Amino acid sequence: MDLSALVEQTLEGMGFELVGFDRLPGSQLRVTIDSSREGGVTVDDCEAVSNQLTALFTVENVDYERLEVSSPGVERPLRRARDWARFAGSQAHVELYAPLHAEGFPEAGRRKLDGKILSIEGEPGSETVRFEFTGTRPVRTPSQAFRERNAARRSGKPAGEAVSIPVEFPLSEVEHAHLIAELDFKGGRK
Image (cartoon, rainbow, N blue to C red):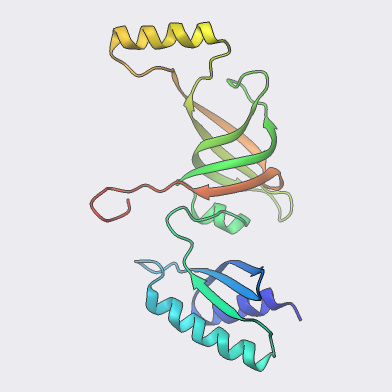
């Protein structure tokens, strides 16, 4: 029995999406859910899913001590191609298995990128993510960093030249990725 597939099927029937399913030490099950509805996942949604999964696990004779159901939060992980497609246009943090070599990056490349998801293209299993890296141009020597800090101090502008570099990488090369929270500091999200 593929418990993850069974949980995913149950959640889809309830109008939710399975973001993550983990078996943790101590016979704990962690289920992370999401919703495309306005307002996202509520505490009542988590309670309803918990009750439904408890009934499912009883019928399927799943042995566990504790069930935890939660939303993915504002820094939602991006795991599947459909996550990338759904959040195209959003800010994200990406960590790749190996450094990405692209025009505008230093010779060593970059493994960690912050920027905007442009799109995802390709056939299942060979998808390519189009991404716009945003950040500052890296400095290569301590003396170069010192000169840039002094120039910024004199001009009153922040140190480091801002860059925006379009890049592409295979989805299979993504070690970890999540959305970057865009908060308005008035209690809401942008």
